[in-house]
Image (cartoon, rainbow, N blue to C red):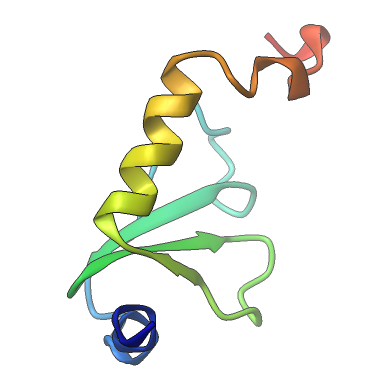
Length: 80
């Protein structure tokens, strides 16, 4: 669990990135930032909330599952 504690003590001094599929409004997107030991994920609509932080292994597992379509059922067909 020390690995996760280290992630939450890592400074957020990088640059936030967002998907090219995000809306043009920068105030309504999920953003990611590479940090020491992993990645921080932020909701730009809620700047008062602490970003969540994930290890490279956790992020890779999520991305692989998303690519495999494991979360497709969560998407409203009208949004595509």
